[in-house]
Structure formats: C-alpha cells, structure tokens
Length: 186
Image (cartoon, rainbow, N blue to C red):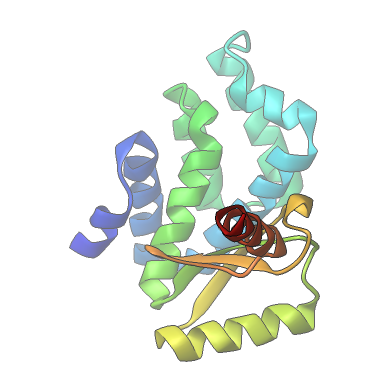
C-alpha cells in the first residue's frame, strides 16, 4: 500500500486512506465509491448540505444528526454512514470534498487507472469522451478516467493533462502563439 500513501497526503489523505482500506477489507469499495459520487453531487447541487458540512456555526451534534439524516435518506452504506459520523465527531466534515477527491485517486490507483484532466471549450459528447479515452489509453498504455472542465475562453480544441504531461491544442493558445509570432515579423 505504499503507492497509495504516495499519491494522497495531508488530512484528507489520511481519512481517504482509512475509508479506502476499510472498504477494501469489507469488500464494499463499489458501495462507498457510489456513496461518494452521490455526496459529491450533493455538495455541488445542495446549498443546505454544503452549509451543513462547512459551517463552523453548526455544532458537532447538529452536524452528526444532519449527516445521519441525509445518509439514511440517500441510502448510503453502513460503512459510509459510520465514516461520516467519525468526520462529524472530529469536526472534519469541512474537508469532505477533498477527502472524496483523495479517495477517488486511491480507487483509480487500485484499479490501475490514470486520471486525465481535460479542459474544452464546450462539453464533450459521450462519443467524443469515448474516442478521447481510447486515444489516451493507446498513448499511455493504461485505462484513463477523464475529469472534464468546460472553459469557453478556449474558443475550440482541448487542453489535456495526464500526470506531468500537458497537451494544449486549444484555439486560444494557437491564436496567442500566432500573435506572438506576428509581433516578431514586424
């Protein structure tokens, strides 16, 4: 497990590693992963849940009751519910999103997947995502999970970052490079 410890660090890394190890031991990795995907969506879309986990005004007991209620309504696994309880008891719910990100890195590493950050001018279709995954897999030699971000300022094209490698084929960068080259011509 030394490779897992190498890819996550800090407070969020310790908690992510703890829930990851427990999930693997209890053969519940898929359940916890699905719960964390749902929690990530809750954090992004539900202002009340976001306030519950991040507000210093909400007491430890109120956070505990709140996350228990949300977890039971959402149908989270017992392991996830217990984990949220530990986070609430230790006043660490504020780090939930970072813990989820670290957990996702551990799961990807466990599966032998590589993560790619893709920035595009518009949301990629399923067919485009599949084609990009296929091309990245053939270039890198392992499965690739894509984390996509839309940045309309790119105008077109993509920026792809896998590990320390960056491929920038965005129209904005090409235009910026052309402008720099034309300044040298004058």
